[in-house]
Image (cartoon, rainbow, N blue to C red; front, side, top):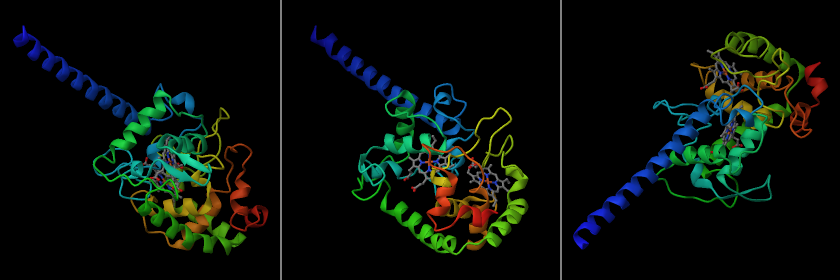
Length: 278
Ligand code: HEC
Ligand code: HEC
């Protein structure tokens, strides 16, 4: 009897291990698809009110996988920082809570925490940190390296935004037409292969990030754009050129988030919205 039971047990446990692994692989693959096709994937589209995909800002790397770029916005290492302290929440948050921040504020959507979508996206993002050391940050929901990259860039641009004028805004409008509009459109609506930057479509649906999204914050947008755009020619714009372009695109209409408006991002830089734009 023993002779039969032992191999049987071995087989069953091997089978169990295999199905568990396949299940995890499936969920990771679902998460990757959602990051690539956030507003069309049948599970995630109902949580999104924009025409953006996560991958538009957390871009593909050489391996063609979403979020593996070596530019700012990469997901490599992201999962190692969690759970972490968040000033915004005055509490400890998990990776799913951080993901939610982008569903709500970037994609103008709804909470995904502990839904199939939230778990799948967290599984995918975590898979990109396999083998890396857990860091659990008591300071901010970012790894020390990312904290450094963002804060150095932000510091540089905050100084420039504080000095901005209406003339700089007009310069930004001109530069946008020269360097960005060919892909993102004069009306900011993008095209089949380029995501939108602002405004609504003819059905009245908001297209891009909300007024309280990370990209709506003037210094964040400047840091990201300098390292990623114009597509194929990144890191060619000077600090003042990027500053001027951001004054222009981030003054454009976008969905307010819980009453937070575009104008407030200018106020945070000590700027009066009307003086800058009119
Ligand atoms: C319009 C651009 C944009 C889109 C679209 C976007 N994000 Fe983000 N996201 C950002 C920016 C900018 C940051 C960095 C903000 C910071 O750290 O202060 C960020 C940060 C994050 C972080 C923390 C990364 C880290 O390493 O610290 C996660 C996780 C994240 N986003 C997930 C998502 C997911 C999931 C989606 C799709 C549902 C998404 N984002 C869509 C702009 C975007
Ligand atoms: C050659 C076409 C092209 C040009 C020129 C270009 N972009 Fe983009 N842009 C893209 C594409 C494509 C993406 C999405 C990237 C991805 O999915 O990897 C993108 C993404 C973005 C995003 C994040 C997603 C969103 O829609 O909010 C911002 C912000 C952005 N571009 C700003 C700019 C600015 C500012 C300029 C001019 C300095 C510019 N781009 C020039 C093609 C372009």
